[in-house]
Length: 290
Image (cartoon, rainbow, N blue to C red; front, side, top):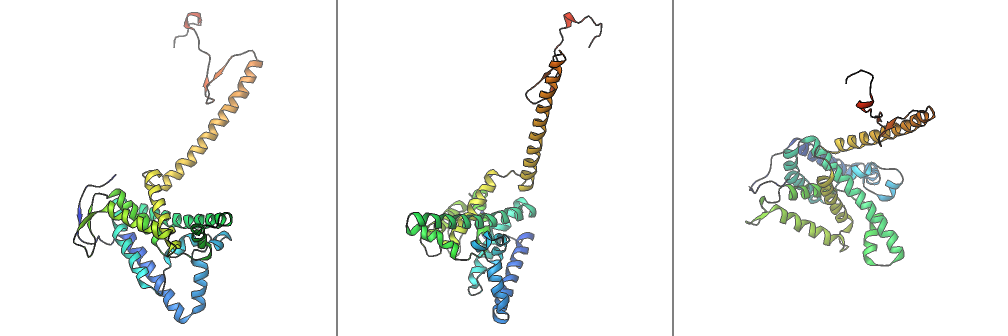
């Protein structure tokens, strides 16, 4: 599925879904920044209910696995700017290739996947640290004591998709006047995220980055071409069909018992479909011709 080699000099166009997500993220950022100055209670409420907090999610605040992706640090505007730049650079290409619906599906799949990874790593870290007091497990368990925010999980999913689908594309990385293949750029960013996750400097956020990339790879590798909706419908129809086959087999067994009691022989295959006894034409003197 990789695209052919091409050289990228400028920025991609603003596609529909990318533009909508950027506007939403910027609007939330401005509201949060103003609320901290004017209505601190509203800011505190948003911090508690909209950030990704593992304990709160376990207590039923499941919406946090999505809402955290629209929250950015109001004290560091670069957090928002770099995320939106990545969303624009890699998201527009994905949307142009696969359409708006699949872009939204893929993006939020990665956002939720990053949140799930964060929760899983935090839980594992706490359990492991109680058994073995390694500093690594302490870093992982720190997720339960910190909140996670930012769109980076979804963006790292788009990043891995760009590396897989456009791996041979030559990209100029500002300010270096050297073209580098997209797959190498993606590999470098993932390596930095991996090292940072276990260094303790910004491990909480980096585990979310790695989770978004992992779920992006899983989507491209295992989800059918037409997306999660088709995969879900195929699964539902598969379960329904298996149920009906089981019902046919049960009915066939009951019918065979009845026919044996009536001294008649009837046949059913392993799926419960009726297969009547074969009739030898030499012994058939009924006069009927089939």
